[in-house]
Length: 384
Ligand SMILES: Nc1nc2c(c(=O)[nH]1)N[C@H]1C(S)=C(S)[C@@H](COP(=O)(O)O)O[C@H]1N2
Ligand SMILES: [Mo]
Image (cartoon, rainbow, N blue to C red):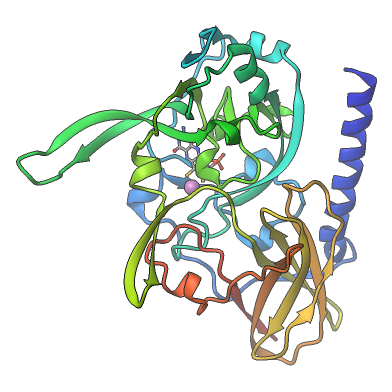
């Protein structure tokens, strides 16, 4: 390893440790965890294989989510890929189409990014909670591979295909019904794909990617919702028209009631960049003192987090250290509750002054689909 890289990873580890300590503080001094009284239901049987590893928020013990505690979402199958025979194809509107082996990918420049990956469906369904995790992702900058391939001037989009596939149906239950097999895929405009933060990622927290999280290679697009981070990546295609597969044009399309010239319309927008959000993670008790810990994240730096207990006023929480613009930030607040039932709500405020919307904000209240549910989260707790 290069000296500079060693230094950099050393610093990162140091900062991560600090944040971990802040989060584990109460535990370290013999604190007691008070579990939330509003536990989410378990994932219903038809979706058991789709959403896995949804941990309870209060079991979060470190700023970095360990690989074996990271959630996973798979809409089709979970392919077991042999890294010896795995290939990444780069084709379409490029000067030099190519096929890369994992060794060839590893031989290219390596970068790391700490990025909090959240499923855009997180908090949108009763059972879909804590579909979020923070990891240090390592791999080759996507821009490097695209530059080597030479994107032609008439290119519009870059499409990323996974090895997983399933059956899709259009015009269901009509004489025009058509079934076909499709791979998981997502696309991005060329300019977004060329973002230097994007990685063809083969490492998660210093280890090879777990199978559930895309072994041997996945796309990591910091600042974008989980769905854009294509796992089990096998093919990159550059094209001159827009890709409209299921996960671009049907699923992961937010439908929201909006007003236009006095008329109500249903606005349909694609799920892409992540939104400003925060969550109360846990309450710890030490003697008669209580501490509320939580997390905040978003597309811009988090400037503040405020907490509301029951119907009280918003109180500023103390923010933990900021570590990279794509990673979540810890926050905490001392609390002296009376015994009985309480609610705890948090809201994040970003550097541009945007406030995480309340649940009755039209942005959230008029949203008909469950994706992009970044409304304020209220948790319930019983104090003895
Ligand atoms: N190939 C493939 N990539 C995929 C998916 C998938 O089903 N297949 N699910 C996406 C969705 S919806 C999310 S939220 C993230 C979750 O990443 P994780 O499973 O590593 O937590 O992966 C994304 N990448
Ligand atoms: Mo997702």
